Image (cartoon, rainbow, N blue to C red; front, side):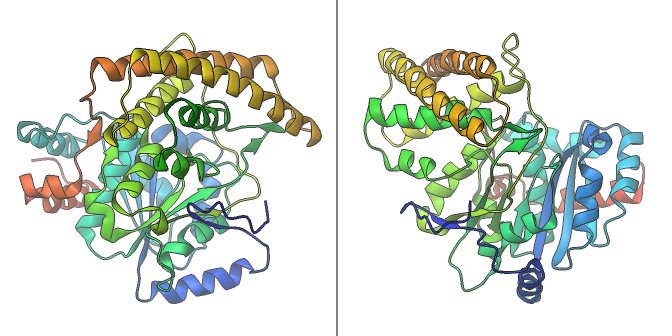
Length: 408
């Protein structure tokens, strides 16, 4: 993917293989002397038993420019939380494990409900949100990075390339988004990006006309990547979607508050493989079925907020246009896979397109039935305004969990 191509909407940084990793890390260590860099790792307990996380920690342990690592732990009981703390203890950096299912955290989340700021749906969005809250409470980092804990092909260069555009003080970028080819087990990955997001955005432009927001999303080579970095000044105002629309939601927030000139994307890997979600056609609350619904709703909500008028007829036309465009693009992906010697299950790919087409219509109907639905977690400025002691109590609760004291 080494090229000089720029799309004209957001800056793209390529890996031209001309700067050794050691040089990149040396520069970041220099920046970090005055601009501390922290890493957030949202993790399920089950990922501690998976094939990826051990190697990820071994790679992160070699990174000298990191000031702090914040691990958000979901789906863990007390015994598993204690095991997780031991598991992550291999990190030489200052690090903390936030027990999101612990009694102290549950009590804190309950405090938000009488204020009209809860309940907050469990999931990756809430996990990232709590980690960001802890980082804000620490008030000592200038740059934050996030990546997933299931990357089988992880190398520390991914992190260095991800944070560099926002860590370099001479660069103007506030948000850096990672991109890479999704290839694993000799097959082409990234089904939701390839078979839903890309043809959907093309179809939206055809059905509703030109929109700057559509051009902005289309500029991202991999808009659903879980890897991004930000300068921390914007974190208190960042609204985090609680559903599977997290990645699209963060890009939409960057569009709203920062503008495209403050956003960039950077090539962070030659190959990338992580956990593949099931299509789950029989369960609308699981797998790519749920993910596609939430992504569609996130895009429709943003377009409506910018003035687009939707109707049932618009969504019917969009569904038909999408299906035709997705099938045309599928032909190209099949040829691309064949030329590169990758396995490509044409039948399974067409089944996913059929499901996504139905979910475009279903997401549209959900939006029409409840256009005021806002599945956003309150931003931290709002939480602080409603409960000025919340962040300090949150930090104290994490410290108490770490110390092992019994809840009051």
